[in-house]
Image 1 (cartoon, rainbow, N blue to C red):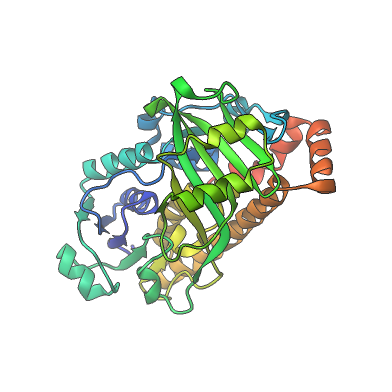
Image 2 (cartoon, helix red, strand yellow):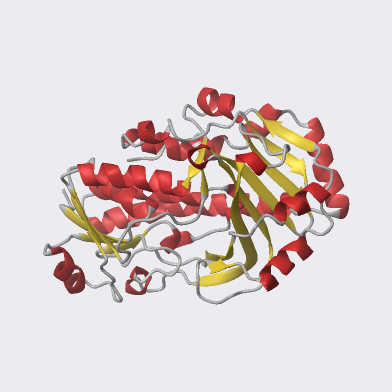
Length: 388
């Protein structure tokens, strides 16, 4: 066994999943988190079959299924006419074709389910309110009072662990921003449906909306071109930012524009991405999730890729003869898949934001191509069985 104990920097979805994944192999973990309490970050989250399959393996899925919604359909809709362009019967496809469910839920629901599993597992130890500026073995041992064979950086796009990995990826502003808010069921417009994920497509941007059963509301995310507010992952919406939002969607359907006025409690999220680079130092430190490969949300795979990373890191490390070999095998396994997911996200962005002749061609393709054909294009993504 090359690893007996791991230290994990960050108690988000990637970090908590990593702790549970290593516990499956009998490995203890110490999770270090700067926050004093684990509270909700963001709002809605989509969990596709490639990730829900792993959550089932970790005995977490059963705790979130009563709280989430398995959408009957995912509908691509014109943001200018509200006409449905294409509809995938996702609930049926997910279970029958890919063997695991597709669900939407509040991010805090998943985090709390993972946290509950971590707290119940005697091999997992959580250290809250502990900030690490430099990720060094001595600094971590001073917090955990233990020695660790492996350090896992799961601390997001502004990772401090990344500085311990030479030639690691670097963050940059993507040029896109997201406005995230929820709207209560009682005042939601009729074109939002409790059993569907809706993606409204249009020039310069798109809007995704889906139900959050836990809070009796819809999660709404509007993504478009925007200004860089500097190093942050969230900013409060200001009057100027709201004006920018309305300007980006001014040519959309009046009902969509009215929906966007209901953003009093919304947040403005600059979307950052990471360049290519090394994910590990060849010795004892590795990056996962957004710390390694933060990407645009156009394929709704950010959380899913983090869950896959954590699960497959444990599998590769524990099956290798040495830790350096395990880290190299992990990166070799994950990089091609992450790159393919990035390309899918880029393709979706082009299709979602198309205008002019490209829009006409997109709409025609959606109209004539069978749903099963679109589903087949997702087999590599949703049908993936992570190696844990």
